[in-house]
Length: 334
Ligand code: FE
View 1 (cartoon, rainbow, N blue to C red):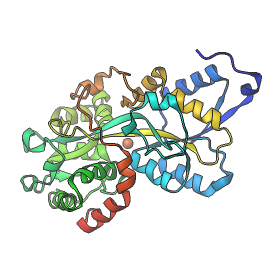
View 2 (view 1 turned 60 degrees about the horizontal axis):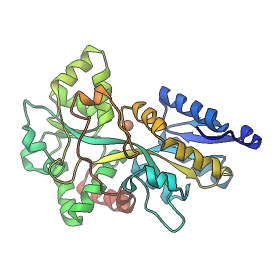
View 3 (view 1 turned 90 degrees about the horizontal axis):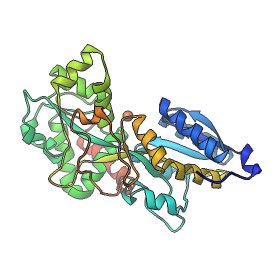
View 4 (view 1 turned 45 degrees about the horizontal axis):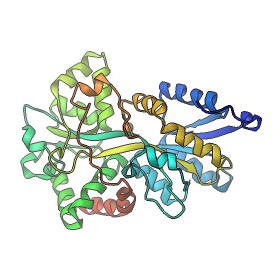
């Protein structure tokens, strides 16, 4: 517990622009208020809505902390100057460096507070597990006519592609994207859950999804969702090589905050073991902080309780974002 706060802190309010909306987040924010005396005024929108609002408000924005989902979105907002770099020894100690923005002399802009893995889902009747053990294999002609994904330029895919291409280099990376396009069962459409359902229905043989979408289906008691879960298999890719790609839900201090101290305090609170558990559980994710473990049967159901995660810095997503979009255009990846 923190010591009692001085009276002045009692009327403080923190403006949180959040793209995350889970019931368990409420407990988090209430606890922060109890411990610090700082009230939280939440502005809820989706990721695009929050970025649009920050852009429209400019230097008049009352935002103190911004919560967004996926490193690609964090990087895009960061590139538009929406975040203020901060220095925090507590955050540095709690969160592994690969889960945050590149450090500059001024500090670090965005930090991840939960992680999700991008996994392969396949139809065991049409595809062998050993043919989908890696992201690289998704471009193998063996999988011709079987692959389904959501839009290539969706942040979840942009982030994954940015890390794969960082390792492959531009030439092999372009060939890999071309190979993915050549293997498509249909033009990219829908969200991650739609890809899982399309594998279960037989329209697709193999697809990509974030782990929490699979966990939601596992937790569902609808008969049609039960059938989907029983029908598909999940692979954590690249276990023998680089590890499975993980991404983040994260936060940053808003560029024009007038409450820098409280904003940093909130970020540090999010990295505490108590907050980490709630933050991860709210969306069937994994804690980002070192040494914090969760026990989620819905993740266990498909082997997601432990796996080797890729530790390539997510800062490479920021570096490669524009290039990957151009490479997708060249590949004709919609
Ligand atoms: Fe999502």
